[in-house]
Image (cartoon, rainbow, N blue to C red; front, side):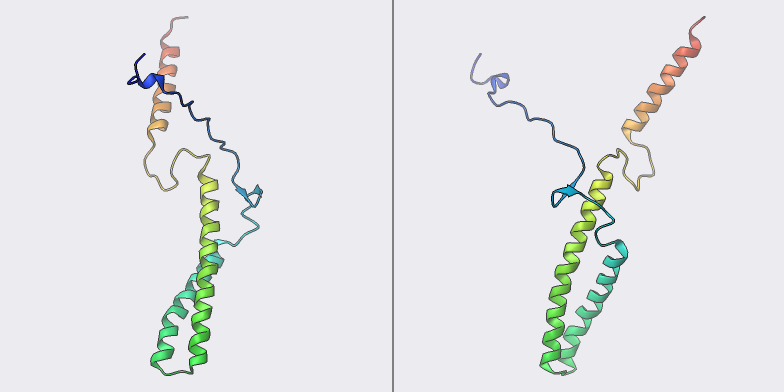
Length: 131
């Protein structure tokens, strides 16, 4: 063997990844324990209103304490909303982990088409064999 031979690579192949349940704080991810989509939508609506209202309080010359308090509320709400979206994205990822087909797909995947043609080919062979 020469040094240019790719088959002589001394690194072992990677072990297969564990595709078990998604863990959250050491336990299996439970969608019932966290915030839902309705909570997230409410957070976004409140955040949108406060993002518009906060700069307007400066233009309208409201007291500085009110503008400052609204700014702090916006920052805290951004943090909470960001954590909620991370949790919801983990739920979606955990839900899709075992599926082969995308949720919004209008057409069949290549794997589904191959499975159908293989099943049709086996049924044709069985019906054409003389008994």
